[in-house]
Length: 150
Image 1 (tube, rainbow, N blue to C red):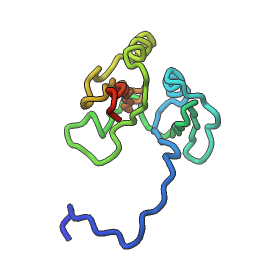
Image 2 (cartoon, one colour):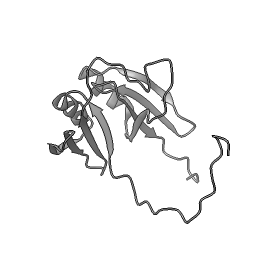
Image 3 (cartoon, one colour):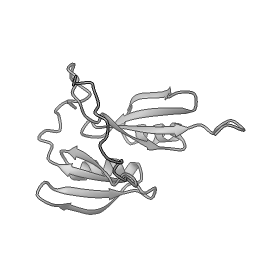
């Protein structure tokens, strides 16, 4: 079997009902919690566990776990900032009803955009920002579908 061949499933798919949380490695828990608070996340637990984790919850139901084990605040994001590309999750994308208002709020708080605003296909647009540890967050705005289009 070549490395690009995906084997056929031997059983039915494992049932998945949703996304439980996104884990994000950080260097300074409080600094990161303040950034995610700009996006509406509230720290509800932590730090807890052997690799201290803080749980942040959002009214939309999205949960982020901040994992406090990044060695240096100044280290590059190996998935985004080095020439050699490594496998991994490059960013999280959060639905946002007004990316221009979000852009203004982020820039007023000292977080300039790292990308956008840009069209993301015919029905969406987005902006990108880096958290204090250089993790990429996309704010994704879906355009209202044209009448008769879903």
